[in-house]
Each structure stands twice: as C-alpha cells, then as structure tokens.
Image (tube, rainbow, N blue to C red; front, side, top):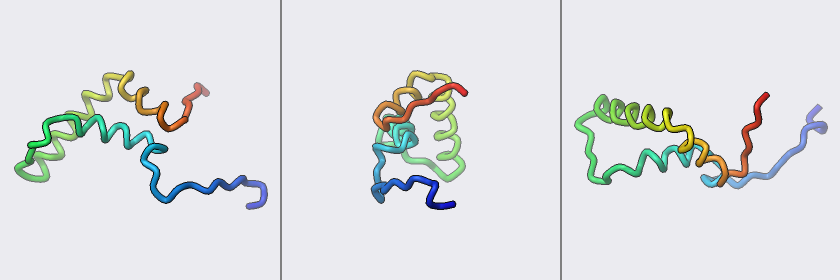
Length: 74
C-alpha cells in the first residue's frame, strides 16, 4: 500500500511553503511596541486582528502565491 503513495522530501523548516506564515506576517505588521497586560488581553488583540483579516479575502489570497499552492473549487 505505501508503495502506491508518492513521497516528497520536504525541508525541515520552510516558512515560505506554509500559507499560515503569511497570516502571521500580517498580524505582526502592527506597532512593535505592543505589550499585552496579560494572556487574556493578548488573546483579545490577536482575535480582533484575525477578524479584520478574515473580512479582507484579498489579504488571505495574497498569502498563497509564495507557497505555490492553488485553491481549486471542488
């Protein structure tokens, strides 16, 4: 069974192949001097920023081309 599956050697760390790295990059664009008061505050800030990204699909789509991935409708 395993012989039927193609294997690909992937680098151990390749952020350019992971679209989630592009999303993190978008989150990090805010001022670098931000300091959360506690974990709850940090969680709220990250959720708010992710919500802003969620409603801007062009930003999310922009994270895919560097990876070489293509989303095709089913």
